[in-house]
Image: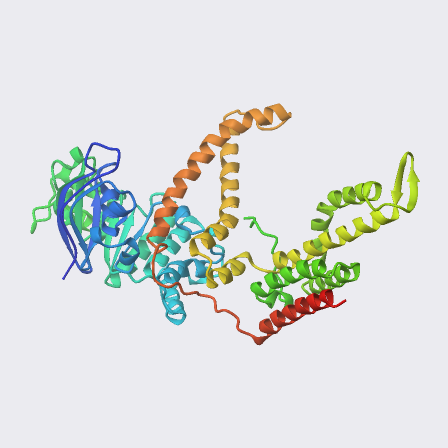
Length: 281
Length: 255
């Protein structure tokens, strides 16, 4: 079943002349892990926000085409209706704290209170999402007293508690230290295992290579390619789009080592190791 | 992080009274001394407030609040003792100034009322979590948006203050003088304001989006994580307060 269908999406921010998204079409299946890559201002964040309805409802501006998430047309629905289908996590963990709640537990309840979820179900959902993101032990802390990684996991938990079918993560680890981003990546993995459809924007290319089912390459608002990571990272012109392939791919490209079955370069350490060691023997 | 509230955490009967009953109490403590304009009534209300503050173990925290208003009270006493229009009986003389008994008595009455109002508010402020107060107001029909503004201000202002500190440190590390004479401090203030304001504006936009995707503008009926205490105790308090107010009105009407 298709979870996300995007047809000929075009979008221009108010007071700008250039289109931020130029005629983008793609489809995503249930449970897929999709990464979006591309240089800065390629339209990655705009596309993410178009999936949750912030584009066009929050920004206004000129909008064309269709985005359908879980059977609901984004352009014609309110953001508050969409929140039960699709959730988004932003870069900065700080600004995602509502600031009106005194404990992590209450903070996660914020969205559920707005949705009008009955109290018993609310508590079940909060417990579930706190466990899933491994922050249950911080439930009575003040949200502002958490570390960056913990705070970002709380932000993810507060979206998960709203039980969306699709979760969009817009550079969730870009403002975190290595330990914090490792924590967040583990959390994203456990979401993926739960069968959730994930859209991730990320610059840490090794992570993208490791986890993604498919990778979407954007450049200047256009969709360049949308395919399995091996194929994307073996593209000759990848550097022209401002993307460095994973280190392992670059090394194997230099050594002309390809995976025999597919004809693409390896993209993870394990693959590269297997191939290099075998080639030596 | 410092929270912007005078709330003192404890587990006393006064803390367990629901915020709305405390609001009713404030109304009664202001109204009754006005309806019954005797010093006894004001003293009685003040006495009740002091007992409640003692039970709530926050009496010591009221003293700074009262001493803060002490200057105003003192000026009331001086001016009324000197210039009250009904002044007849001189009490004592200090240089060219004559203090009168009637003025002093009137001033004391005003002071009593002011302290009484302060104490009544102190019960609410010192023994109620701000978030609980706002939540019970939202339950009773206050717009959730206004509720959010009120409760977030308490946390976000300290956040802004810490941003301000970070920026101050950054500017200082680049050689800007931020300490010393008043004029140096004023000069240092302007380069700080730009980044702080810009930073808050950016944060506000991001926070607005984050709220939006958590259903802040949802039209569904809001539910609450915390259960409202429905003990008959709170109803009894409200009834007692209403009875006291009615009693005061009757006392006033009867000759």
